[in-house]
Length: 170
Image (cartoon, rainbow, N blue to C red; front, top):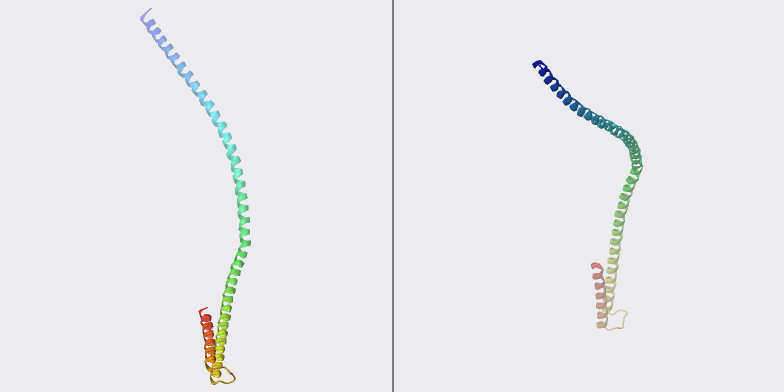
């Protein structure tokens, strides 16, 4: 073999090694492409499922929002209906408060009138006792002794004064 033949043989062996190496690399690249295809197919399936779920969820959320808006409108309508009732209750409570104040004032006036009447009654009793004392002192119309009359009159005056003091402390 000649030198040119040996060189050709070396080049052929080198080319064969290069082709074998390229076959191995291309084979691994093909396997990687297959795995990528499988992954892409799974991702597409997952995206399709997620898209369907999102579509379903968005329809359900839209339905819930519509129902929520209807419910909110209903509640607002009922609040608007009940609002005058609360205003009427507030007005009624104010009227009841005014009525209570007027009742207190009326009771206070009657109490004052009653006290004045009691004071007038006490003054009448005291005047009557003083008159009887004076009358008894002169000795008109009685057969009792002056000392007995004076004691009775003083006792009656003491009772009236005690009754008046109890009245004024109440």
